[in-house]
Amino acid sequence: MIRKTIFTFFALACLAPAASAASLPDLHDQAAWSEKEKREFLGFLKSGQPAPVNGGQVKAVPGGGGTYAAPRKARYASLALETDTMVLDEGGGRTVTETTTIGPKLLVGGHLFSWVRYYAGLKYNRIGQQRTDGTRAHLSHFEVPAGIEFALIPLGTPQTRYVLLRAGLSEHYFSGPGTKADYKAPLLGWRPAWNLGLGYEWQFDNSNWRFHTLAEGYRSFGGGGRTLFYGAGLTAGFVYTF
Image (cartoon, rainbow, N blue to C red):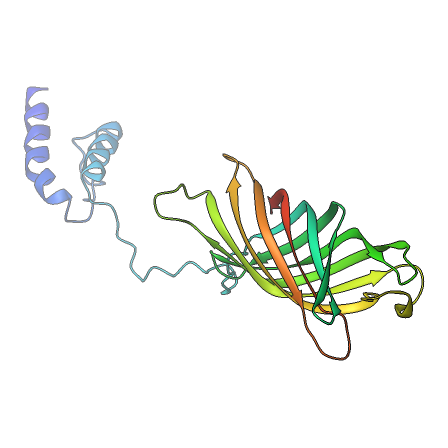
């Protein structure tokens, strides 16, 4: 028994250093060991061998269809209330001033860049106008504006507050009783104009909602015997970004 143990120790000492780099020995003719001892010895050799290296190249993981989706630019919708003071040119150096009622103004738009936005919308209010017979008529006033809006962040202010600059064109449509001949400065029909606006807007914390207020003005294009007018008003409302 002692001789068998010494032999086993000697075999382990001799074979173990080379076992990690060589193939496993054939122990079938080793009659001095039992099958259990052979399995334990081979298991010992296997535990010291380096992990097999799988040759070849790593294949690239295919992408998502090979296309790049650009990030979607934010869009917004604005609902506000506006009232104007309009000055009409009656000719001969005479003007008349009319005040409109408070009416709704809806705008929708989106971002061209982070600080440049486009918009288009619809506004409605009513305006009174003097007839040639001395009576007054009440006209419906629709405005269809479209243009560019600059949202500028003043130095030293939070990133959620902007100075707004608007510039664009609009079509004004007036409808009411009678014909153009019934008014000293007729407005009935379509009238093109250009628009300018200056305002301020701020975003509520952790929200898609913003509030804005603006001073806006417009002036009609002349020519064609149409009545010239210009106006200015105040706008205040809420904006939702999506």
